[in-house]
Length: 89
Image (cartoon, rainbow, N blue to C red; front, side, top):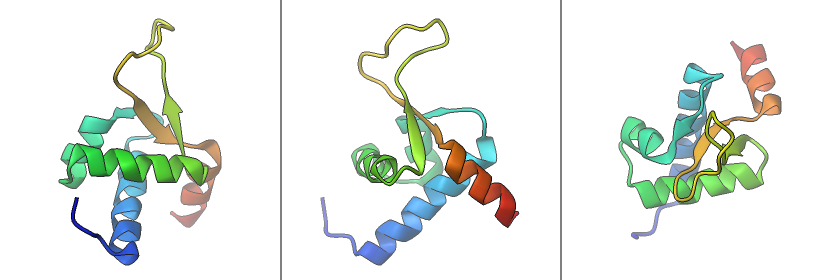
């Protein structure tokens, strides 16, 4: 993966957060997020992991029937991030 500056990573992370806010409360798979922001899935997954560690997004590991996903993950904004975004709008 080519080196990407921290400033660009921050901008792409903002795009991810904005997209998740626009579809909230729905959660999206990693591939759907990558397609929307026009980025590689692995790079998107890396950024999603960083956002999760910062507490801005939450990982959904189960489907609607309560069964664990084996390979896929869905993502949504954390409640704290959603409230902060709502106040900005």
